[in-house]
Length: 476
Image 1 (spheres, rainbow, N blue to C red):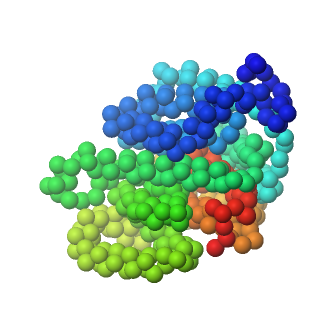
Image 2: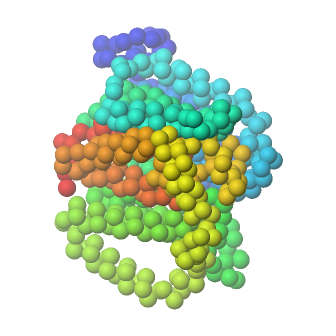
Image 3: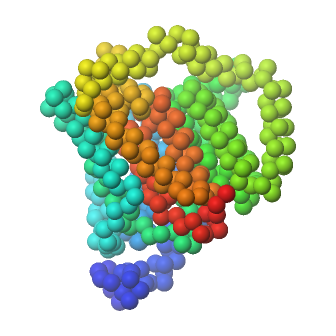
């Protein structure tokens, strides 16, 4: 049989999927072993500072999985790991305006883009699916309309159609709607728990690699840390913290089967604290508390043990405060300064500007590509003038229309994650979403199409496809 023959087999799958070797390869790609190997690859890239080479390998791996795997979730592993590793490019680039190495470092490999694009096209041809309109479809459509119409009558055509603005407007709106429809159509209902297991392992892998990136940075500067023990501030702290906020709930979910995974959750939280991100320190602590409450409520058999461990950990932290406070003081100080001297904070100035822009343009806002805020915070090339707060971004960029659309979307997501009686897995997804939304109160967060909104869209579709009767998705 020709493995590239396009058509339907009696089983409903293409003939390509019937080869035994291909089936085994797909099982390997979706296995924890393959995720572990990809984690090892990412770690080697970080240790040896081989970012371009690592990105090429991950792009090729993504392309191969797109062609060989009928399961759309599997190729997300190398794609998201590549996005995570990419955030370290800012450490090299230094964000030097038009001379930004972020772009020039990868320009020699521009031709590589044809490989993943071709792989995506091949996936569409080889694994055709029926159109499915999921539960979140109408809400995403509403947001797409609001995003597209944002700034009507205010923003200039030059600003609206600028590269960065067009990318964000397109992929925050109808572009992400197309992605959602594609995922909804390609993913079947999870009746055996495999999808839940893969997603949990994938998010765990992302969290572990993000933690490794932070710990490696500290180890590389160990001599200086020994002389002066103090938290290290670095450029990509908010991005790595956002990844960690998305990943943090999943070790707690896996702890229902093996409590040892709780240690992994604490490792991720420690990495978040060490990231020197104020948002990570504040909202990561809140998310950790949500995860602890989640485990206590859902795991009744081990509740007393967990309470004892939590009490012992709290006492240990209190006793170590004389050492911890001086170490983390730079981040604590910046956090306090943002509260005490709010008027001098750039973010606070942007917040006031968002309200001002909304009052001046209440219906459609000023648009995502509005560059009128550069007097407060000059944005980097291809980046937008963010308000650094999701609710204010909505009303400032899209006005009342955006506020209504996003409110509809928030309500829809809550219904999807917590429909009927909440299950452990969907509650895990809900906490991950809450973590991303919390980080979006002080950073662009959900307004970054790739990777954060893409990850959230995947989690929403996975929540829709979760069948509640399975043991791994059992109600609390």
